[in-house]
Amino acid sequence: MILVKLGGSVICGGGLDNVTNDVEPGTVLIHGGGCMVNSVMERMGVKPVILKHPNGYTSRYTDEETLKAYVMTMMLINKLIVSKLNARGIRAIGLSGVDLGLVTAKRKERVMIIDERGRTRVIDGGFSGRVTGVNVNIMNLMLSNSDVVVVSPIALSQEGLMLNVDGDQIAENIAISMNVKELVILTNVDGVLVNGKPIDKVTKANAQEILQYTTGGMRRKLETALKLTELGVRTIIANGLRDKPIRSALNGLGTVVE
Image 1 (spheres, one colour):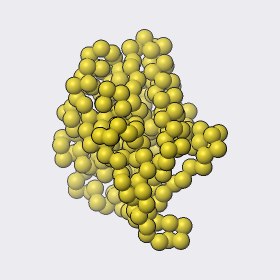
Image 2 (cartoon, one colour):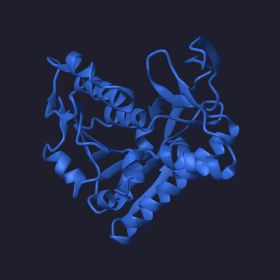
Image 3 (cartoon, helix red, strand yellow):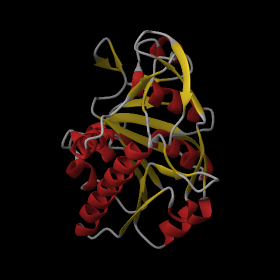
Image 4 (cartoon, helix red, strand yellow):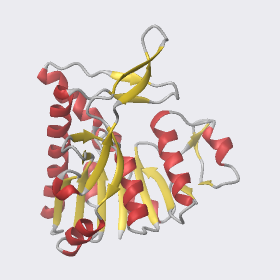
């Protein structure tokens, strides 16, 4: 099984065809698409709210109206990917983590933020969550009845709520639950950058030094990859905008974390 996390920056950067033309049977593809969510929200007259957290990360605040835009957009992206794959003769199925309880999550009841005055505050967590599990039986069922499974980052809470979750967390949980040996993370840069240049490899030995050069989404991706190395998973963070991005990444073109 090939596990691929497709970042929204690749989709919004015009790289979707590059990726779908390179997907092979036996692939599980998790996609993002936050940049497209913003566009849909604006058309709905809903202003995106981006939260800043004390650890330096940012996240989208997901209230009820934002959740509607998020779900609509993610499922549109999902079906775009599925339609492109099926047009190539690849039997693809697309679903969210909500379907058949594929991905479960716990709602974030409270989140800590830094407000516009620089004060640390605790606010309601809205409809966002942290992934708690992946139903391996359902995933295997999907894989045995199709060539490719495409997953949107929407999870199901124990209370039956749809939750906005991080696609990287879904990829991490699938990798752990299904004993995956390699994870490809496609983004819009050539890997982990240090002083503007991509580095070939991150290992335990240089991880802390490299982390100092990373921020935001890339830092999150690198932290996920480093966690997976402890479980024997090799992660390649690579550019999804190049030709044959998945094949190139599996051949080591990008930053290999192992």
